[in-house]
Image (cartoon, rainbow, N blue to C red; front, side, top):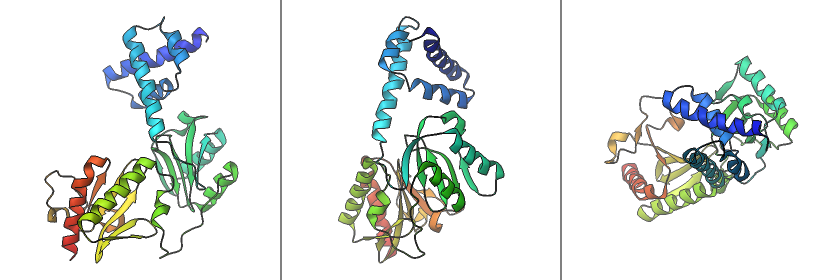
Length: 283
């Protein structure tokens, strides 16, 4: 490997250490972190003559952490989602809509920072979403079916048919594009809730409903967590661990007055107790 290429890695690492001390320029920090995550064992070996042992160990830790996270977040490709190398053509199309500003846009990153990197591209009827390999959303453009069709033509990605109003979805359809650990987490949570109270599940267009006579909770399965929107106000629950967020004074999904976010198997027992309380409140 040429010395100039090694110097890029050295500069990235030294910039990270400087930015950690200064607590400044988050974007530059993240760019350098992403760059170091591309490093391979051969390059690390070559760097040993340029950095001290402690620095090499820190770089190896960054590299190993990246490999672990990518493995955990590995998502099976579906018809509506595809792993692509982010091209300049796609970035330019996204930027043209972003600059126009006439649609619903969420942009958490500068897409040019990800040029030619592998990302997830997901297309739905009027939504185009770009996420990194860890499942974190980089940019979403919604409300533009024609734009989605344009991106589909560029990438060859299929656009799922629009769900008709009132049409029910199967529970399994919500698993599409989600990591297996999140699917397993949801199934274990549902099973534990059903062990405690007599509830059933019903798929709607946007979420899975937990029903016990009345709707108790609306479940939204995301890539890294499960959002549970409760149909009762937070103060009605016995919640010593304070996992319930009060949404009564803010706009919320499906007009739910409270929510909680499930992330680990260790939380299942406590969260299922909250659902059991919701069941009692619904009776």
